[in-house]
Length: 120
Image (cartoon, rainbow, N blue to C red; front, top):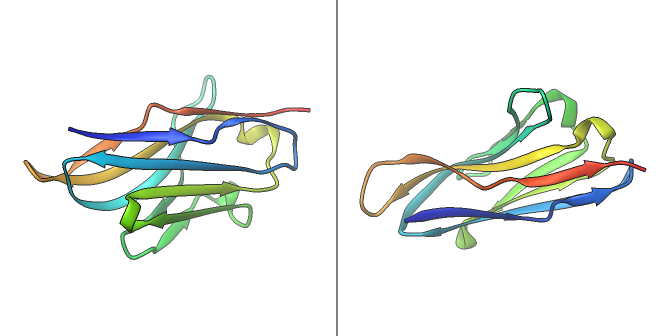
């Protein structure tokens, strides 16, 4: 089994910061692309940021310059540092990873989601 466990969400005032973490565990042979998505009420899930195994990154335009994605390959963990948060950043944030387990082909895995609320 493979699972992704997220942490770090919560309530923050506009302009504040939060750091999300997502750790992959289980029968992992290799972790490829890791990323963060978000879904606000009434909206579709959207890609926020993505990072490859060699740390090449890309971001959605609305978070460029404010969010930073990083990863620790030794820990199979991806992070999302979110600065200068805005009310429109509020959403459930989901971790995603393309993982090849020992017992089969690569597959997309999702975390359970963590709520980020930006409000004064």
